[in-house]
Length: 287
Ligand SMILES: [Fe+2]
Ligand SMILES: [Fe+2]
Image (tube, rainbow, N blue to C red; front, side, top):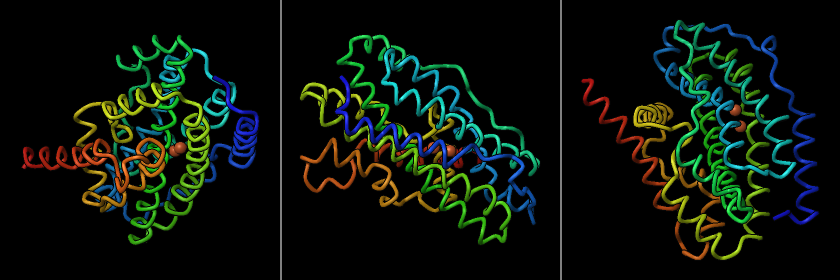
């Protein structure tokens, strides 16, 4: 199904502008000087590691997209290939370089394994009406991911400033977090336009699949779920339903508007709670 012309033109323009205004951050622009590497590692090392991994895994995300959408709209390809991937990979390289300079190891990434559920959905997406369902799921995931990233980078930025790590805050986190809202806007514009065009059965399928498949950003196994819980705890949002509600704001509005008063879908809330629980359980085992 093609988008209405006006929405399509707006998206192309948005992606063009993102590409022009936000070239990938040059490594030379970063000031890696750190006042207290040991303390920084202790406090935020695992957060940097988690973020570096997720950003670097953009290369696997591109493979997932190629699998999920056999016949994607041109503007989607334009976005992920020319703008999104080059920006995200650079975020990953910079964060990874920072953690190594703190004496940590490089992030352990999975750049090639596309999960079974995605491959199955990709096979079904050879039927165009199903591909629209997959595409909607992709935009919803994109929105939740980018929103989580912006919120997390804001908190990390404030934490670094509090520690007096001004150089890193200003030359690593500020430029990175400046690039995330444009990604979020792309997914949001796309999601809103597509949702309008879906038939009732497609909407039902999106709600159903989403309820079963939602997971927090960067979480593909139980270990990573606990890692994410640790990140939430360090950033002070382990029990923050406001944070979760913000991550799912547009998703709640689009998919669940009929369920009046629902601040955040249950599956989103329980996924984030699950991460915190997994982190606490792991810490308990280690103690
Ligand atoms: Fe990023
Ligand atoms: Fe992003």
